[in-house]
Image (cartoon, rainbow, N blue to C red; front, side, top):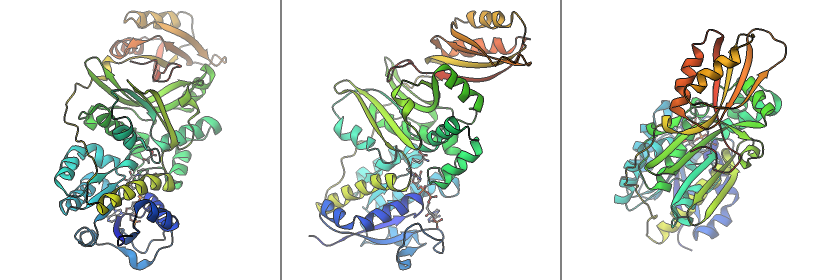
Length: 440
Ligand code: NDP
Ligand code: HSE
């Protein structure tokens, strides 16, 4: 065996602890896989006094990032710090500094990869080291290598998935046990699924970073995060969840990327999924991703999308990959997406919709709403008056046929101005029963 390779780890929170635990407990196996033992050189944290989920020699802990990055005996840096003080630029700069020192860098940081991926990959191309980021999307699911390597010969047509563990856990608990949003969010945080600032999870930003990364690899094009239409789950109420159940659906936060005739479409939003759809049974912190490639056809990957060990699994795979490259003095096969394709506006998307209105309980209201919708070519698949107590206001719930989003918005504007409509409580897209089907 060659002499041990030293790895420096920045961050020992949820993911860092998982990585350290696997490195310690699977040491022999990892040595065999990598062809050389992998030794932890130092672990940089913010507060060395903190209790850690894994027992380690306290002398391994440090607060000096620059000493680690500049240490010539450490060829491999693992960045698991996230965005200190809400700033993604900090970790980005550390990664750039490590690459400039010709080190290999492993990261789980989806925000940094989504925002600065092009810059980082260009720096990695110039470096003798490399950049590895499997853990940045869907935790333990090996989706990035699958796209980059196993499916490299396919033109990917679409990606559709549940790629945020926190919100999937929350929606599952809210659906099964009628728990409140705040209490299930706290539980997701306790379980280590949520980001340091969980706004990123519940507002859909985390899923938007991930689908931006996936679509840029799948379509080999630049996908700026700002171009991803993004809606989170904060407006989903217990009533919507109940309505969905009554209508034969569950609500999931879904990320979608599709190749269109004239560009691509990338979006994240809550979605009514038929109970018979494969995504409907993806619960808790599990993630699932469906792909359509022109050669492979339909492909589905399923696994734990967040948490200490599943994410640690993906990071460790990258560490082993990097160590093999270091041993053989080579670099990972990187590809910097260089195309710039048209990214279509959400207004051009075609979908079915669930519309929950609060209206005056009197004859003619339904006809007024149907007319306003019809004027913008929105036709209705079903209408249900929820509840039979006739308390004012009552809920009238509609499921539309497929309609272009811009038409739906114009129709809703008219509906909201009807004197018999108190408010439009929520509007949620409805997916068809087929994998990747239903919406355009
Ligand atoms: P945590 O908040 O649990 O851990 C962050 C770690 O970084 C802590 O050990 C903290 O130190 C350290 N840290 C924070 N600021 C500094 C600083 N200024 N200098 C040095 N160390 C610092 O985050 P996670 O482990 O959950 O996430 C880490 C990364 O992995 C993020 O990019 C996240 O998006 C990503 N990720 C997370 C997943 C998950 O399931 N949690 C899954 C996939 C990716 P201290 O412990 O002393 O406070
Ligand atoms: N907060 C993220 C999630 C972690 O819940 O999916 C995994 O990327």
